Image (cartoon, rainbow, N blue to C red; front, top):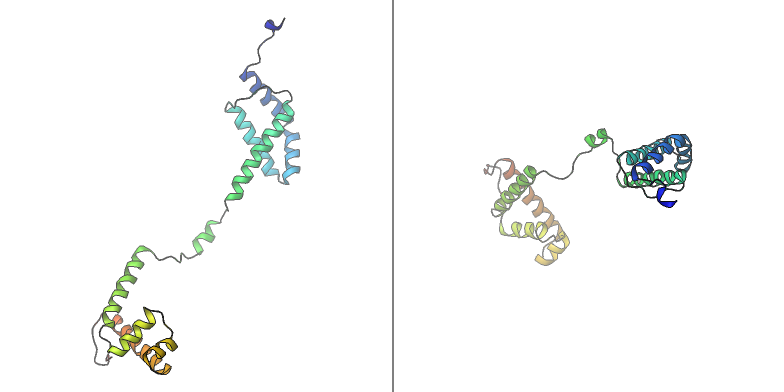
Length: 184
C-alpha cells in the first residue's frame, strides 16, 4: 500500500548523504585529486561538501548518492578554484618592500605650495626670461619652438631657461630671501 511507505524526509536524505560521504571519502579524494592535480584542492572540496551537508543544505531526491556527492564536491571545488584565481596571493614581505609611488596628501600639499611659491618668484624674472620660462613650463613648448616664436637663437633660449631655473631654485632654497649673488 502506497500510503503506508515511510516518507523520506529532508533530514533523512542529508543523513544518508553524510554517511555516504564518509564511506566513499577516500575514493572521492583520489578522483578529485586526479582531476585537479592537487590533493589540497580535493580535500578542500570534500571539506566544503561536508560543511554544506552539516549546515543543512536542501537536498531533493537522491537516487545515486555517490554521483550526487561527486558532483557536489566537484562543483564546490570549481567554485573555490574560480574564486582563488580572481585573487593573487602576495607575500607580505614583498608588499612591504615595494615603495608606494603615489604621493601622500602631505607631499601633494607641499608640492602645490612650492609650485605656488615658484610661480610667485617667477614674477621677479626679467620680462624676456619670464616669457621664455612660461612658454616652456606652462605652454610646454620646446626650445626650438620658443626660439622661433620670439625670434631668438635656440642657445639664447637654453641659457635663459637655465638662468630662470637657477634663480628659482636659489629662491626656493633660501625661503624667498634675495641674496647678494641672487640677481636675475
